[in-house]
Image (cartoon, rainbow over all chains, first blue to last red; front, side, top):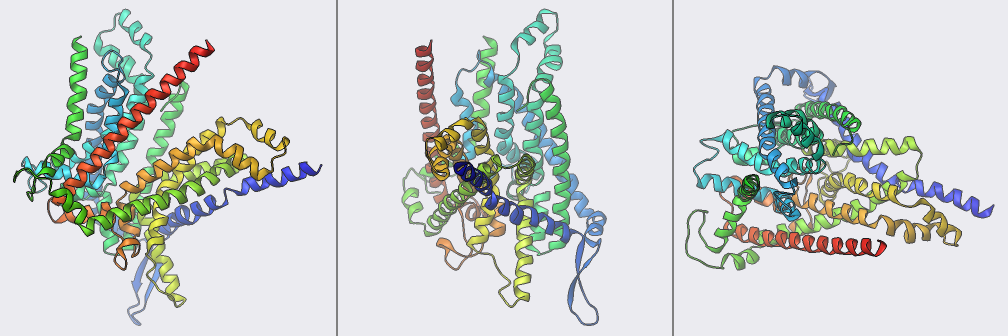
Length: 280
Length: 285
């Protein structure tokens, strides 16, 4: 009886171990997002008579966003760069992951580690290295901002594409591919009707790992385009430097909506993937 | 055969392209020219110059300090969080799992911006109460870095708890261990691999971070009364004005050697583990 009581007391105690974690998450993750929401739908005004500054509920930040051509431009350029980066990364990464996972081509797991290893060298330093090399080759932010930025993005996000694709490629059902071949499918058909659907979950997670981070990146676009290309991340940073908390919060909110949308898509596809036997 | 040649050359081509910028920096770390692309004679001078550069050494020190401190804090709070969640009611556990996902999927810039907005807001409240309105310091930076790494500790510890044999803990209690002893002598050793990988992940995330550092830093650590400078923020400030400073090319060489030795170490370790597993298999067979 006594030990039972002690046990019950401790099950309570073990549960309480998560209190610091919960407090941290609430204070520094959930409350800040709440404050961003609050700032996004309020605005700071100066009373014309007394000159006192006050905050009031307002759709000013919303209006500022949707009526400003430059902000629409930031949105379009971000979507454009993010889409292109994701596509290029997939085009390079898909065959790469396929070859890496194919035992006939590569038996060496170290090679996979080598593709991930650049991530351990400081990211800003790597970006600077890419810029200096491109400048040496005659491609700089001054004359080719888009090309320079895209090269930098692909260079940085390729490992994030290779990893999920490689893990799905390892799980490819080889007998299915052979069966398709035996039944008379040509190589193009084998690829579109068999390999691609099998690798689909990996492709989705690869897209997620590149698309949003590219849209919201700051350093790569800032350094490689020499400030000529403004992505979402750069604009939020600009609002931060200008201490424009309300407009910045609205930008952050737009970003959060995008993130929410991609999460919904990924959850849907991972549910479909599970039906077929698991995703990344 | 043809496929093998094409595959191999493709893998190596992409690998070389990915490492090219770093390799070029390394090549030019043995000459003292200002820009890469100009060779000013072979010399090792950049290496002593690197260690004499107070600015870089302070930034390096700060980077390591903040990485180790934030990783330790995150590992302790995150591990406790995962253990607590594992023994909580299902609804609580699901809520915690969901809340953990928020910072993982969130864009770094949104994490940084929302934290900053909150700190500014808190500053306004402090000012209204008669305090200082500027609260950015080492502590705000630490909170920022913990926001990045904490969820990853939770995520890496959680599966280890699920794999653990729950009767082990009960057995320890039956054999007379106190609940605290059972926690430290049974549960903690069982989940140690997860805790360790969470710690390493935290260090990596903190070392590489730029945005959160730039937004949430204040004065402190080795920078004294100036804004805390980490390697990322220092390099960013330098490359905004011009090419990568020559001393940092030497730093790249050193970092590259460290990474390569880590890769070699991991490979040897894996090989060793595989051998052990094979031996065990044969014995069972």
